Image (cartoon, rainbow, N blue to C red; front, side, top):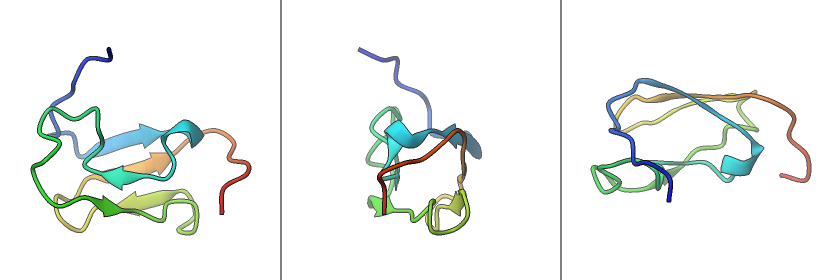
Amino acid sequence: MAELKENTARFIEVTAKDLPLHCPTPEMLKWNSHPRVFLPIVKNGGEALCPYCGTHYKLTGPVSGHH
């Protein structure tokens, strides 16, 4: 089991395996700190901002097979 992380980070790098991306992520310790919101990171050019907590996500690496 992966170690849970506090969702106090304001910048998180994600990869294709994290898609579809939503915040908070299951790895976050306080996964229920706000309603789950799906973030269109691929459509937004590889970056997304959570409207609830302000966490900035950046997509790293190649993405294939995702709409």
